[in-house]
Image 1 (cartoon, one colour):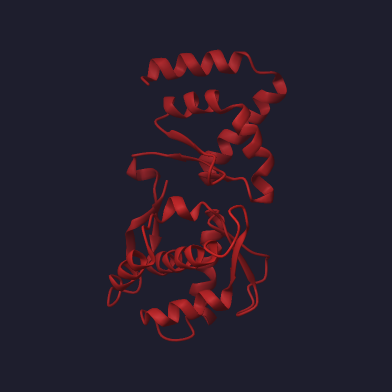
Image 2 (image 1 turned 45 degrees about the vertical axis):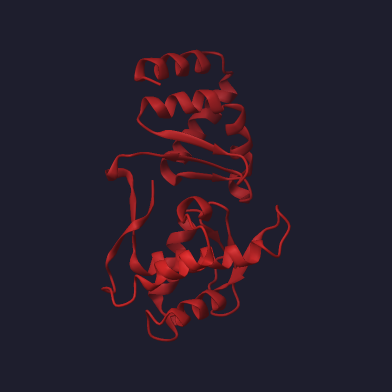
Length: 213
């Protein structure tokens, strides 16, 4: 839609809202701009995710007016925004990208064993073991501060979740379905190939493939 159409649709939708819904509209808009995703299975997002579904037409028009697409992926239980403006993208560090690819592989494996709506989870130790297998980093990468900070970064981006402590080998890690939107992969072989491409690269190179709007 054009900007004029988007503004007209937004104005018409917004004027019909109650004061309570306007407050919710503002809260949800700011949350999406700050965090990109609303994830239904995440406790802190569930209420806003459900409310965003009620306000979806107005939200979509508002974001179109400011050059974002708002996508409601009901199958994955994720509402998110995306943009073609490179200045609004998050460029991940190499280790964060490797962890993402490992997490996507774990999600792929576990989802074949679980029911369709089951929560997919792993542990800090399992992620570290899978990274060790790639031979991209020295063994015991999971015991480094860089590894812990990378997990915290992915948690902020709503790809994973965990309790405050990060005890090696013990801490459970929930993998949200938002990972399916960040790492598109047709098969385990595809993920393995992409991980192989990172072997021998600089330790701190920024990744140009795995990006979040």
